[in-house]
Length: 275
Image (cartoon, rainbow, N blue to C red; front, side, top):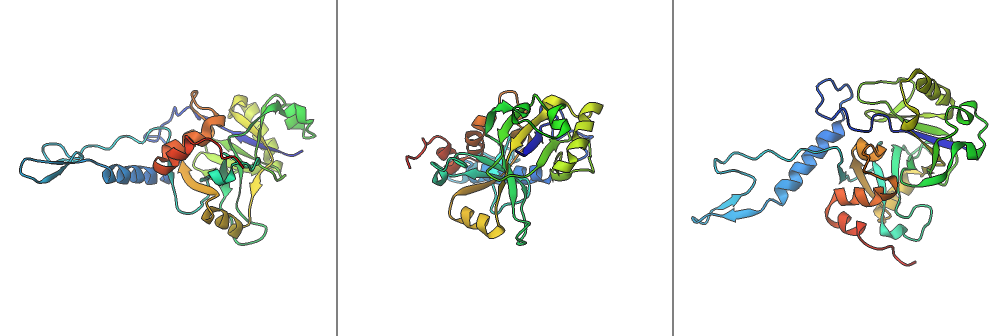
């Protein structure tokens, strides 16, 4: 059975988005800030003065706009179409579909119309109570360096690739970038990943392995989204990688929806539909 590997690297947020020596600028954080500001201004309460003029709470008595709340390490917001590095969040229409119900899929590539180049990704909130060695891998590094690492369900299709978080300042040319600081490679890159562990560039506890992956034809995924099987969202790398000690991949579905707010937050509190 083929495996997927994810490395969460420096997911503790020790180098925040405002770090002056940050190398990999994440434009998604800039967009998320704009989204948060727009959302705040849209729902700012309006007060009326004694003169009857509308006054927004977004301004102080001198008329100067108040500073917006910092974005924080964890954020998520809806986006209109899939993009590399976004997440697909299962809607209630997938309740009862065991493979995908209440899953969060990280899209590694948004894909093209070529039959062999459709969108694909891995489910990131389905841990399995098994370790790599239980799968009796034939790959030497899987059988040794990564033998005692836990497994996660990545999807119903079989292939080999892995994700690794390089941290804020490290650039690894051997692997394809998904979002700034997070890359993926194919099975033939597994030796390079193991070498980074042995050199101390990456730590063993930073890795998560996945069994399987999820893939679509481009039009197929678009149709599923238009039919309300998936919500499409951008979210922080800290949330994707589970960098906070208080987070759990098993509660990621609820957490992403709550951060998205509004109707999405309401769905996170609904019980599963009986199918």
